[in-house]
Length: 391
Image 1 (spheres, helix red, strand yellow):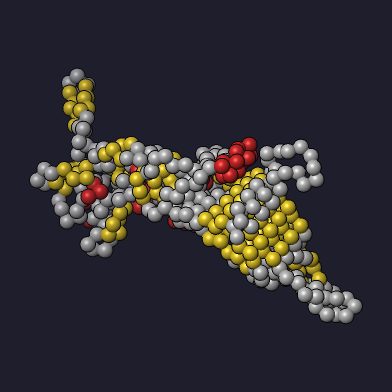
Image 2 (tube, rainbow, N blue to C red; image 1 turned 90 degrees about the vertical axis):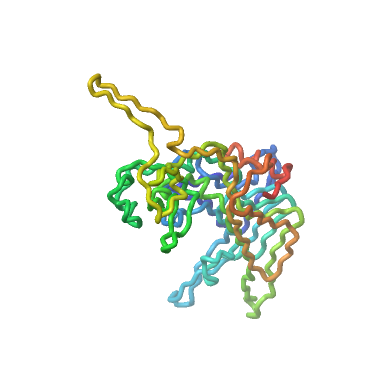
């Protein structure tokens, strides 16, 4: 088994370069069986580290990568004045029950990687994926997130957060502590886009919510398979020898680029409430910028300075606590890229994706993603025996 992990700071990368690579779940040359044979895996790190959920940080995140490519040789002319890289060609075999697992990552076998030019791509001459073999770059499924993450605290609210609502820059909201729901968003009548509340610029705060590498790997990854004829010349006659590249994916083999999903636990989501001039109570996420609000609904405080006593009376209406049922939030599927002169594609190609937010189906039967090298073999066995249900 080859095993690596991807953290929020650095991606796991397994790069195998050879003329012939065979992944086999049984010893090729005899020997005792071993459940860890034939597995190449790059799993998300479970160290608990997070990064802000901002567009720039997410865009800079580097996903896991597994690469199986042929060697490159340097060929020169007679004067050794012009060197160029030429692939030696290669044969890559994934035999029965072998597994390449890189959730949300990139797997490149032989070539076909769109980020490389055809001139330097290390294409294979033959790729063979046997019955029972699997390449799984599906996004992490069933990643559990607490309901409390849907309550973002802004403390204190400054003039910067109130820049789009000048009527409140010097009012009761400045310096206050508020709770907003980052799932709420929209565009005001004046064209200002908002998140959490139409009155407050809360987008920068919601982007500071930490996400783990597992959550960043919930989207489906990319599988790139590429074969190409290696030109050979008969040394005696100078004639070009006929060759054919082959890509064979047998029936019962599996390539999975499905999108994963996040499961939000059931629980209370708290948001602040405002009081209008007429005494009505309005959730801050439903506030109208053209309405007049006079205060936040907060706990009342009674002070008895003579005795140095201060009593705080909690108002049950101060925060709009809503019980939210468990739900899932789907992620996009990935892509399969194939370049070949001849191909027999009889295997199974899976690219499932759940759309947006939906009430969670119970139960969801999916293999639990491995979190260590020791659990990779269990994941492979579960893939072979478990039925994956589309969400």
